[in-house]
Image (cartoon, rainbow, N blue to C red):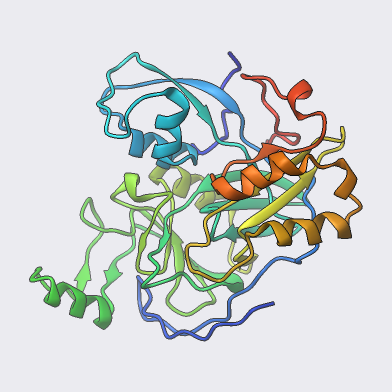
Length: 323
């Protein structure tokens, strides 16, 4: 089996919405999409074997590595509600297409539930994120970092206080730093007022759509990203469910994610348009591509004519390992 990538997960349409932020207060933002005709040239992640540790669950493992718990269960032929035991070995496949991004900055693709960090034109890391639930979606658009804060205080927005009240929970106006703070130990404030990227006190919630709009990272990933960003760093939040990659060796990979916010962009017709614009139509196995579109697994799958001959279990397929 291949070694585990050490940096892996251990670290245009418009919709107007009025949203409450998870940290301070919220405002509306336009949904942004990547260039509809852009093709990536980079994958991140791999196929590897993971040894279960004490306290692991499928949900927690999926949240750490960026693969859904249901897909992990299916790949390994075990029930979704399986109880894991230390020493058990699981096959993981967390390959993702890296969106065409900034030369320097942060890219978050909402349907992927992934954050990508670039510096000097190089991909430095890729991390699963937790995002806003469909009833309280994370906005997208361009931003820059405006604040970096360790051990933040969570000032509970009025809208969330009202939600607490409706659920007969204790209504809090602020939460001090510590184990009960949902922001974790690191806060990266964005120029989208009230929104930010932060850690969490609930790591299994990462790689899910459960937040009030902000972007959650695993605690160790939050520390790592915090150490690499700076005030003024640019970024963009995308809504691109379907991504296509053409690698330097000719392999073609397709990743299709669920359209969780119901904005479109993950249909076979979208892939045909993208392939035609990049002269890839005749190089794609369209039967295999149709299966990937139908399944919407959120994992990059090889779809070129040579797929069966070149893709083997256990191979790392990322083309640019972050430093």
